[in-house]
Length: 261
Image 1 (cartoon, helix red, strand yellow):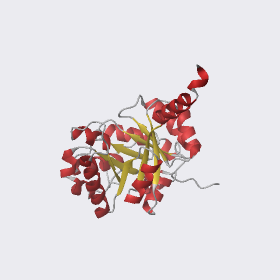
Image 2 (spheres, one colour; image 1 turned 180 degrees about the vertical axis):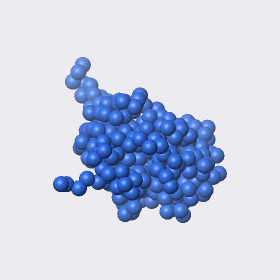
Image 3 (cartoon, rainbow, N blue to C red; image 1 turned 60 degrees about the horizontal axis):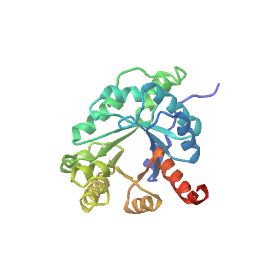
Image 4 (tube, rainbow, N blue to C red; image 1 turned 135 degrees about the vertical axis):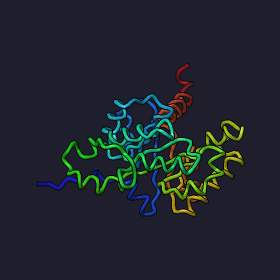
């Protein structure tokens, strides 16, 4: 009989091996787009439960589509202090969880407690897809599952910068620079390249490198992504799929507009 084991997490493996991972996010409840993104080759798809129109049923279907096309499903939960949403996302089979507005080391530690089973954490028992609906023996599941989860936190508040050394020391896998909300916090909405925002990003990156944590950055295009990788970021995101579908659509239509008239 074929041996069945906990699903591997290629993103976790790449990060542990010093490689860089790339992601796209998705806000609309469209499993088919997850499938497309997986076949396109993204390392992981971030299902945006903070800003998107996703409920638990659609996350369930989107996770299946990610697995079908070979990409890692992760969820951005709505709040940084809601252990039930972390538990439920993981029970649905996601392999990583991102919390927004991680302001303190306690926020980071709460994520670990919510995501990990005892003794490392306090996650409630209720696995389904993670055990392949009972096919994986529970002793094997508990032995492997904590090590397969990627934990990420958005650093996007001035308060977080004051605590960044302690946050980076809390033991998460990735601290993600939230350029959008940092720009808001500094009173320069939309100016993600403002010196104040970039200074904050540098501080986050330095703390990550000091404590052996991967730093994440949201790139606006391929050149921006290459800059981020050269800078030392190990996780790079490229906007949301809906946004670049719009951008490519407009570019095409504006180019052919003369033929339409």
